[in-house]
Length: 198
Image 1: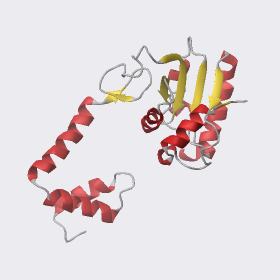
Image 2: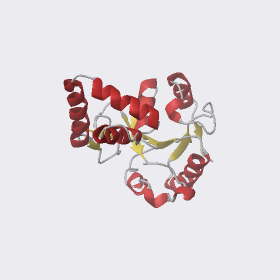
Image 3: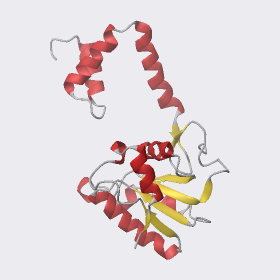
């Protein structure tokens, strides 16, 4: 990339930091942006600046939102006795597409992963515990990986003494796969067939 102008190198390097974007794809995207009309580049730049300035985390569930509380937490038609615990906001989008769930959410912010230096204190577990008044069931909708399983077991042990029903998504989702790549039908069936944590 040394033959590229410095500004183009900088753009390609910035794009290369995005997940799933390798060096070749980043360079191709940089050239696309450069070749596009100036207005297109400005639209992209404004959209990035706007999302960074206006989107924040909901103070209740930690989903991304422009208003606080978010539209899900403030919706009185949703079941406020039911919380679905997810790793990230992308999972909420996937679950909402199924039209099978009408409760609330809580974004944990990841899973326990000692190898990556992520312990329970790095997650939003304390905030979850502060939301449990009146809650009858917590659904653990974590990625079925070793780390997700360890986090589910940890949370089940923590929540069981509180007298709350703890369930998890059914096992129709393959172990080791990411919820991001599961289709809506499979995810919807997994929600319907959730099971009690022992």
